[in-house]
Image 1 (cartoon, one colour):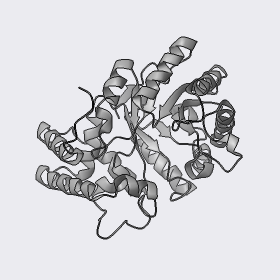
Image 2 (cartoon, rainbow, N blue to C red):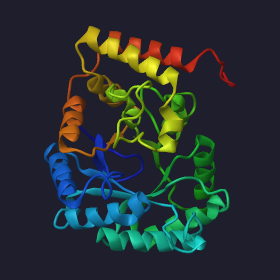
Image 3 (cartoon, rainbow, N blue to C red):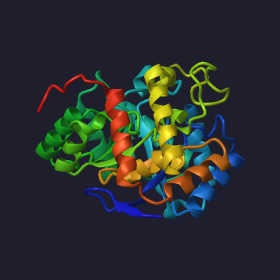
Image 4 (cartoon, one colour):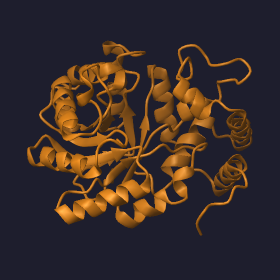
Length: 323
């Protein structure tokens, strides 16, 4: 398993990261242990969760399954989501983050997190307040590095400026959505990240499962999958244009002899600006298939060019605002 050192940190992580959104809902504790074991056996050392995943149950399962293994794992969680407690304990205020972090540490049965993400921007809280909280957590030994998820490049740039002014550690790890069907970050986010040394840990490598090629627009979502009754994912990917792009990718798979999974994962891992890719699974055989696909050979230039062509057709002719 290839490793990367995350920018401005002492963290060396695997190019693949275990995502845990299904743990505690589709995946029980026994299966969680098996999934983690398979990932660790493949050389994965990076695990990603969030307080809001299944209202804390994901963290609880991880806490139990990581007993005796914590020192070998780079562990990340996130704060923001409402957890069934008073409203002041959601969002990114100092008070909310203190409560969220302490609860996450308790559920995960650990004294510290290697990475602690602000899960998404909070318009009600000044960025300075959230950054000050992260700095306090770091100085208290509760986290090693603060990070952001679902932030725009200008928001991270603002946080870098504030951190520089105040003498705080900047959030140099970011988690955006990125896959063959969602390449919007390439326009300015990726150049920004390169310029400022922001490491990218990307999520949704299979577009919620659309890039498995198993879903059908006509038949509707397969029961038990990410799209089954999930309005967020239906709104994000369940569109005719995306299904046309998947059909083009399936043809590329057939013509090239590379599986659709291999194309999806290798395309991401072949991008030098991608430091780690979060992969989740609800079944052991799915995780093993994803691990095999990620371990396959780099894509040829012909395949990469065809992926670019498919993306350009999906993106359409709308010009960018900048040059």
